[in-house]
Length: 401
Ligand code: PLP
Image (cartoon, rainbow, N blue to C red; front, side):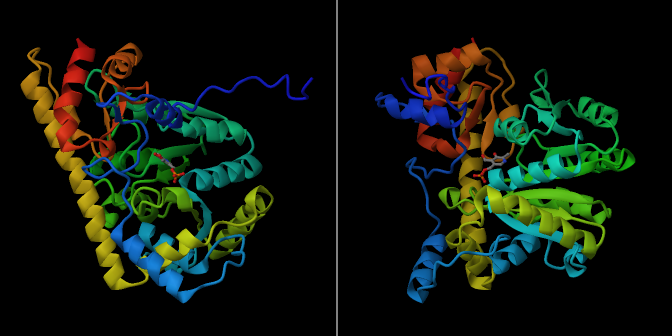
């Protein structure tokens, strides 16, 4: 008898499990709107031209594959902090940012969670309700207690701003407040700049620590600077900030696992100490991060021509998603005779649309229409083409009514 007899079957992952179910379906109209990964109009995965170009360059250079330092590639860490905070941000000049290359967004969040567990025992992280499904797993596994703040208002399919502010206010002083820098996942609903200001006021008042997860910089608006405005506003107020970055979406480096954790501290000495502890956490966990994707990022951002090319491709991707969003809205509005207001689809931003479909309605989407999506009603518009909008609109309207 096996030593592992007592281990029960784990449930499928609510997001990645959707892709598995999709693969197993052989219906010709099937549509995978589960995972947030960019697809072309032909619904194929997309490798950015600028990434292909740099890959070729790197191959020609024939660089070695020695271990990186624990904190990652120095050239990557430099440009990733500059991209997020702005190259001439005083916090960078004053060396007040501890930046460590992590295993993409997820691994970077996990490092920060471990830092919180070790140095802020018992301190809570507040996460939005709803949020990206993996946030809860990350904090659970790191043994960091968390609770939720109100975010989504089903009545308006918009932001419950008052609820959000009240819950952040009510949290014990010095809590960590997890915020999506832009393109909130799963709702696609972001605070306005004025609302961000009020959120920062309350966080400052309560001596909370803002903890940004920014996995879609450049992908929401098409501009890296615009999408980093929330983070930069908090930093400009002199606040200490944690920020986890990812290059999965904006550079399409999903499988390379490239991202970073940044901790903005009030002195360079504190930043050096924080960085030393982040390295200490990383070393026994995975030792050091991957080099190839880090070189890709460093080379693209470090070269003005390549950087321009990247920005143009990012705009193209963000633009395609916006076009699909409009077409879906038009299809829903013209096909649905119930008088329902679909304008929320247009107000949402980023890769996703939060449809408001409940679990049973999502089941109908999948079982009857072969549309694969997460059970919270989220659809990834990055996996939708203009050609499939009408079909999807039929499926949504049928499932709603
Ligand atoms: N944070 C959010 C909100 C996300 O949506 C994602 C990916 O879907 C991530 C973090 C992390 O992705 P990765 O680990 O690929 O960088």
